[in-house]
Image 1 (spheres, rainbow, N blue to C red):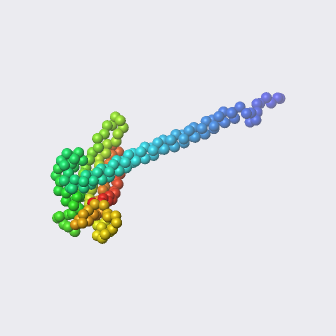
Image 2: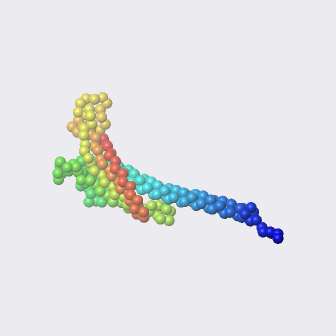
Image 3: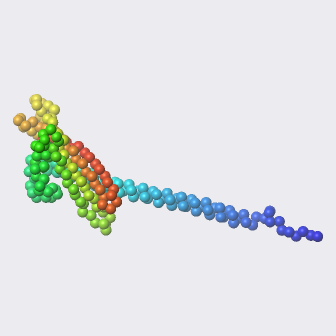
Length: 198
């Protein structure tokens, strides 16, 4: 009797199908990994952009605080009403501007630092253009003043500002700006020491 059985063990018919399936699974895994990396990279880039925006808003608050100090110093502590209004300072703050910012004194308790000027500002924004809205809290406080080294004796050239009876001084201010984004609550907090000569 003849044996007409087909030997399937040595046949190569299914090897191509299995190879194609393995290559397809490997390429799907590779594409999934690339997609995951792109998605997580985009998320990190978005978080970085939001933090950078909050940090820039807070830095703008520092510049705003410096502008307030410069305006108070240049007007000898008596800001005109229109300038005070354009800076966003309530009219009830006139005493703080004159005594605590300009004179750098605390009349209630001379051994303590002057009371700080605290302002809460909400930025104008337009959501259709992608602008972020921030709540800014700006704190300006006079720390202390010291005579400029050499202002008590004869030096050449003399230090800027001051008179014989009122020698020039360095006045140090602490300016803190806290910017909080309204939508995502990202917060940036920057504090600076500003020195001015008068």
